[in-house]
Amino acid sequence: MDSVPIRLLIIDDDPGVLSAMQALFRRAGHQVIALADPSEAAGALAEEAPDVVLTDVRMPLVSGMEILALVKAQRPDAEVILMTAFGSIQLAVEAVKKGAYDFLLKPFDDVSIVELAVRRAAERKRLRERTRALEAQIEVREEFEGLVGGAQQMKEVYRMVETVAHTDATVLILGERGTGKELVAKALHLRSPRKDQPFLVVNCSSLPQGLIESELFGHAKGAFTGAVGAKKGLFEAAHRGTVFLDEIADLPLPAQVQLLRTLQEGEVRRVGSVDTVHVDVRVVAATNVDLAAARAKGSFRDDLYDRLNVISIRMPALHERGEDIPLLAHHFVQRSAGRQRKPPPKIGDEVMELLLRYPWPGNVRELENAMERAVILCQGDRLVPGDLPPQIAENELRALPEAPVLSELQYTLAKQAALSAFERRYLGAMMRRTKGNLSEAARLAGMDRSNFRRLLKAAGIDSSGSVQPLATGPDGDGSDAGAD
Image (cartoon, rainbow, N blue to C red):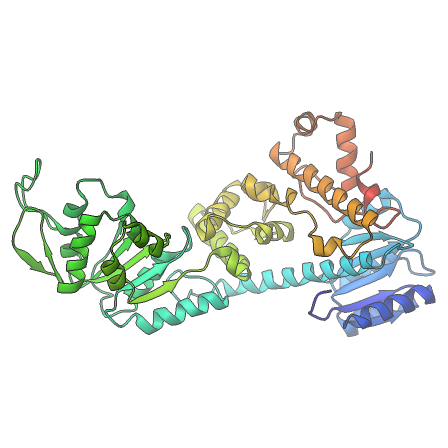
């Protein structure tokens, strides 16, 4: 169970069920309010502010569907899970459309099904609360010139930037592509005494072969064919400022020798000249390559590595700081909407869950591009899964229940739960792939159109491919929700 206590309101007129549920969740460390009389629900909602409401459907005087309406009116953020021994697919779909998180059929062969549903409902509520807080927080100016994030790894980056920015120390920034290494370099420059001087960026892997030394250090007139006049290099142009050398591992060995001289002596020698020119430049370098391995292969000089690695700052991959994904997503949505001159759309719960599950091999840059695409394609005031790039929207197809979760169930139930999850995600991904074209989705799935449509309806999936919470089948595992 989730380590964060859940405030759970249980409503059931069956004393045996109520007592068992109450004992189950209290043993797990959660705060439980138990009601045998559903007419007391309004008062309990007003006083207790539950995270999740677990209620029976068939009760005298007040039904579970009425409890659902009451919760959504009084505590719209609370998630509702309905339980009944007399359910149907139609009732389950109706409940989900009216805001229920899940619909469980009694009796339960394994109570872990109820535990799992409550835990995930509480997680959904917390995610929504965090999203709202981030929407308010994103209005605040970023603390580090475009660097966004509150994860512990990012706090360490901020601390290092603050500590070394005012010095002239050479800094080596390490990290995967797309993690924001250039933003760190710019933050170092803007927080330094050199902030009013040039900040020049060069990607060492993009410099034309044969002209690398000329680009960095300049050349004399007649130094080579086409050198009709003398030219300053990057280091002279950045005098008294900062040079950011990205992808430093791609710098050829002859240029590495020149760079080492510049770092040691503070001077450059233009190609084709015997004279030296003094330069006052701070160097910040970055790489996504293991420089120790490059040194072992002989492609990177030991002495240059030692000189560059005076101070190193490691930028974490996005999957290492997943807690920052919601904040970054909202930041990029607002920024992209501003560029598109349109109101920023909200990020729906299901979209945020997809963002949190995706591994982000392209890191922050990939997230930024995904949010920009989503804003451009969004047709309403809220992003839906179909607005996301296909690799993100369809990632949930691979995100089947994890083994630790499935191991809480008996083998038969675990197998059915995994199959049910696969079916639901497959159908949603297929509808997003075909942009809601039912006939095309059925054709690609190799199914009859009417059968495919019946599966969609049973799973509560709309034309955009949005996946609703499953209605649980008669064995408590959701198997009936996807049956023909």
